[in-house]
Length: 533
Image 1: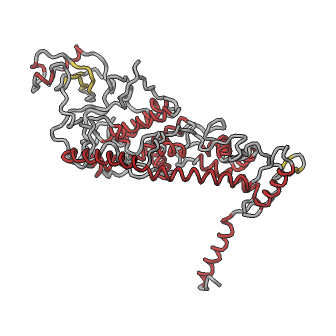
Image 2: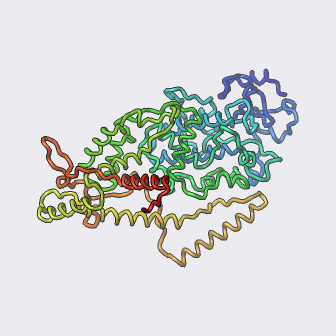
Image 3: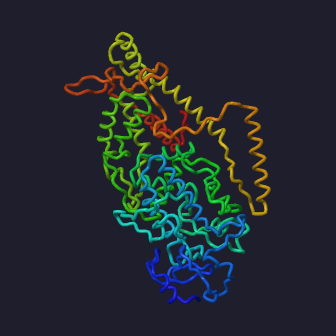
């Protein structure tokens, strides 16, 4: 064992992980903390090889370990792979306009807390029996090595980077290449991780990386809803499918790793929503920041956004605000996510806003496949006779314009899905023995695709479209795509004293009649009578 006292005299800095000053030397000549086993990038120039027992002079020539062949790669753990995916997703969100605090503070602490709760790091006995958790990146001075703290006000330290922007991901440990590395997976614990089934532990998966991202977005109250997040994923702006392609070349991935990191289906809204609540409860997160009226996720603001999106009159915004106020769905306690509450649930903010708009449409037009067309005839006649005046909103014309636009968008979406290449550019193989065959097959597939695309379609491939919160753009003066934002609701509303009310005094609930028939059906069945009578 290395003389600890001598090391303490030579290297007096505090450990970034446990703040202790108790240093020893590894076989490679690097300083490590004897208290928490954190290894630093600082190394000692060794002249006398007797200072480090059982070490060859070649290994400590410059205090650095000589890399072995690239084909061997680093020793890495599954949690490091997910950490790398989270980093890439956080960087993508930052590119989309999300504040840097999401990665540097919120997502950073959520992930550290998860590693601690799942006993993978920041604990006395990690499940992978690993002495080194997350090492300091020599190009980025971060606080990823500190203990995760989640006080009620969530006052997190910042993720401070050095003067030059580092292109490296979250610090990935470059542990020694073990001669006994698993032949069934590129990661050291791939087999063990795939078989691990511990009660009460939320096992990390690629879909759960999106749940982590949405939790962070919700904490920061960013202008991104869950449906926006999933759309950005599908458009390729956020890494998800084949995200392992961005792993460093030294992180070899094969065998059991394929089942852990390879995804062959798109994420669904309900899936990510449930996983988000599951992770928040597992992490014992405190009550999230309040969703107030000035927040993007408040129904008043989201309704305004969606009214513009679906090309409805601006006057409807006043009605949506009234519905929000009367129903109480805009209250702070109703909107704010509290994982530690007895019934932990969060609002589907985008779905709720659309539901409010549907309620307003039913209040105005009843939507019983009769009244809306009758009001449309009235609006059409008025617009023909009063072309100089402000046009009345014509429901039939709006329906025709929107149906055409939605059908075109749906066709584009279906074509994009049909053309999507699920195979990754970085081929996966079951063992290191199959590596050469897998790469050869991948080269053949790429060549065939190029030849086929040349024969079928000579037009250049359209680049990825720029991300946007809006899927539809409506401009005044476009004859093919009428903009209804400035149209009036005068033909639908009427004066009642000093206020306006809807001409339609009914509200048709489509399920009400069905429920009555269903209850009669059950009663007859219980009496033993023929339900058809």
